Length: 148
Image (tube, rainbow, N blue to C red):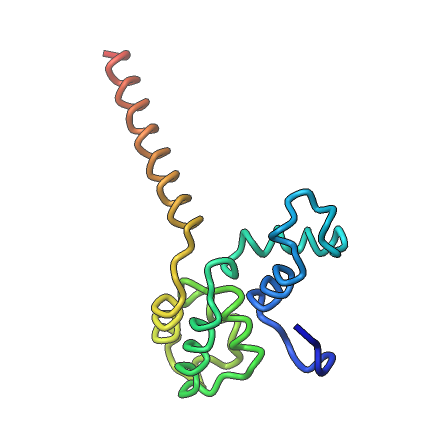
């Protein structure tokens, strides 16, 4: 990968992650062989845990194409791609004057959830919460039996 124009615009987290992978961040578990600075490895570690890890170039291009009717700025689109807001409440701060320009952000949230896959981590955390809730119910049931 060659940089043609410096500071040409914002990058999505996916593009940064892809760049770090191309420099060897994913291939070097010892972190000795890849020509990356320690800070770059920290950025890589954080991006692997973010929504960028589950995105693809195709899904980003598809989202950008489907966003054209909304007339969003490039910065707004990049922020939506990086954050992948799952609700209207989280999309409102990302788009200036959203009510005047788009109306309800519900359509845009549906587009985001349709185009971008649900993170594996979100599914795991949801399963963990459900498991914790089941454990709490079991303990409460045992406490009631013990009190009787």
